[in-house]
Image 1 (spheres, one colour):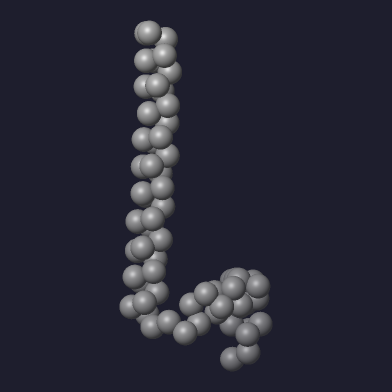
Image 2 (cartoon, rainbow, N blue to C red):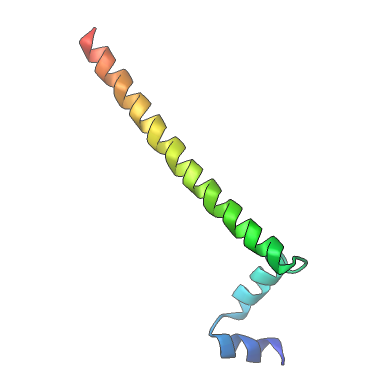
Length: 67
């Protein structure tokens, strides 16, 4: 099947198809799964770091006011 036909069948744009092809084109299925897991873990860690940085700044403000 041609690319436009595949995109219509799966309800995605051709731009999305080519973006995915560039990102995942040479990978095996197991590689793609591992990449998705790592991206999810990375996002979780970034949120945690942001939360801890916020808490540290809040503690610094409290300590400033107390002294």
